[in-house]
Image 1 (cartoon, helix red, strand yellow):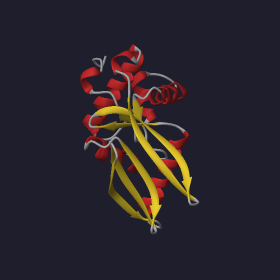
Image 2 (cartoon, one colour):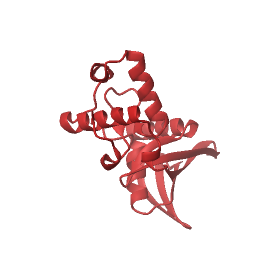
Image 3 (cartoon, one colour):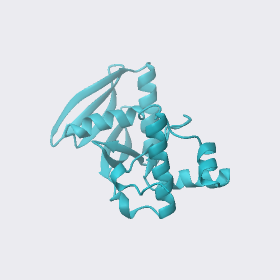
Image 4 (cartoon, one colour):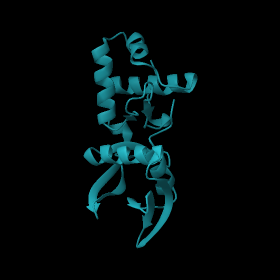
Length: 182
């Protein structure tokens, strides 16, 4: 399915699946440092050189997520990553929480379920997500219809996409919850 996730989602999946309750990300000594917190304890789990590509990518992911919650998978379960941004000594500080998503079976229509099932099966077979043109061909609909469906599925937290990356759709609904593809 192309690249697994954003760097932020990868870090969150690691930290939250190991028991972290929140993350705090801040600049310290020329590095972007990630702290995982549980209760009153915080542990540094990653640091990136401030001028490095990974630090810039993580900072970009955090700023985007602070404007709008991001859908992600943590320990195989769909969550919304909620990011709060503040400032400390003139530098950005981010706090990340993972909010569990509602049960998927109650959140999509039959038509949306068919799109999800197709995305899932296509990705398993081809090891990458289908293009919008392939969705258009399979469902015999117009390009705007396919695009609107993808936007709707993402807004509902049923899929996630990597910004500016083609074929990056990932289904956030477990295969056991998907309908049979017709």
